[in-house]
Image (cartoon, rainbow over all chains, first blue to last red; front, side, top):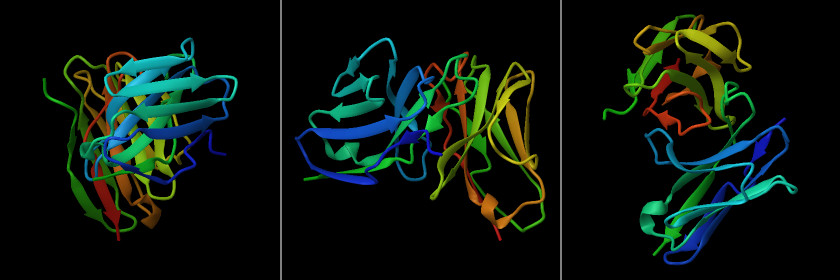
Length: 114
Length: 113
């Protein structure tokens, strides 16, 4: 049973437009959410995170929105740039400081078209 | 500040063999987690070590084991390798827990033939 789901395996967006990546989760015990970006042959790179006590966190071009009632979060990238082309993973952790590890979605491949 | 270092980067083993992977976390980071990435299953949590103690283990068979040394370096061992163990093995380090930013290494690509 997949507790973190990224239902879009790929997403194509024009350069300069907004990219919106979505993530749904089923475990209501998750209280911390993170987004990672991964290029081929590299490890995931941390992008942005959000605690369950917030509904929005912004860092430069990246904004994460959390809707706890819908168990849904999204990552907005504005404006999208060619270097943003990568696989984006949504991850979640539960109470206890994440000692259960991060639970990852299967990723969304974002392609930024010129 | 040096990043997370994983060695070796690539490894080819035959079925039935055993393998040891190494991870050196970022200096000062005491938490080291291991993940397996496969195309079908995505990133799956293997185990996490903190101060030489395994705090939790994911849903993997006992053939997968690990340890952490006093300098926070960690090793992961897989015994009696199976074809399905072919994957990218990623190590992540963080200061206290994975609820903070976890920094990943580049991974070890293991191929079992």
